Image (cartoon, rainbow, N blue to C red):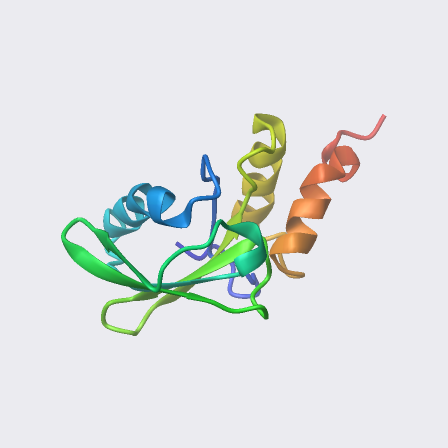
Length: 133
């Protein structure tokens, strides 16, 4: 899934709400289709409604933990075997489709070296993505 070894982010996610436990099943299913079985999810607490310390997804218990040091526009998922950790940009659910598309493109193209919040800000300032006149 990583596109560029110098990239900070391994992917992007656009949840439909700020309820982490409700949004995780779709994300974890998509990751499992890519052979990443998730055991824990770390997130910034200011971007999500309060969540418990654990949630059940597809019959498995997933540990949840919030850390104020995590970029509020990212989540970090750790695989069941502990070998893989993926850091994902989180596009806020109330942002529009065009912004989400630009943010995803920046991550996929490896233009995310300054982290999730900076990448999202760059996507919001789409002037750098436009063709020169």
